[in-house]
Image (cartoon, rainbow, N blue to C red; front, side, top):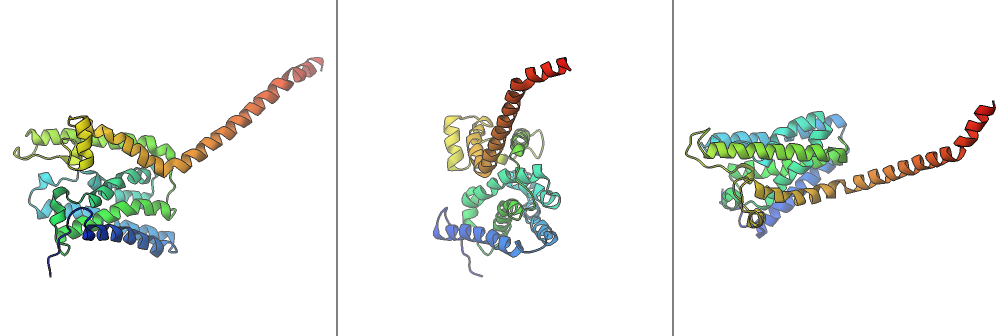
Length: 269
């Protein structure tokens, strides 16, 4: 089998794989759109284990389990995804709309960890590329196939859970790097809380050159991303609140206008 490297970011081959990633998920949508709800759930549930397979592959293959713990956002996505597909809990599915962003970024910024030097016909490429494609697509397919509804009310829980995980993982990074846990001779950077690893995070580091805190500049990015998903729902909710307020105001005005007349009638009776 010939060796064909994935190549640099936004090279011809890299762009082709990004297009193929989109096409895979589009094809899944059309393949499942007319299937029964049971078939849709079973198919997506089966495919959702690709990420867990990748976690096991990395833990076993490279012989450095402390450096491949499932503590990146993509790994958190992978572990929650089967539960979300099987139960269709709103909080979990809406949370994965945000967490799937990590899979998009991992495919785009594939130079992280030297994946640009990966052979397209290698197991390391297969266990990196296809799980990320499915982790990025399945959360969206759950909504596109109407297996679950978007709910803007889950934004608060999404942010709380995400930043709680980030904070906990930062302290795990610190504990491993300082030798409090683990072999004591390795340095890890899960969720990149210690130092940046791509141009966008390096920009954040220039603004706030401090571990943990520099990643808080991701908040505007997260707000924009979630706003893109929930903006129509937020507009509809605001419209409904305006209608309710108008109705309540009309009731109050009606009551104020006629309450004295009704009171007088009651007294006379």
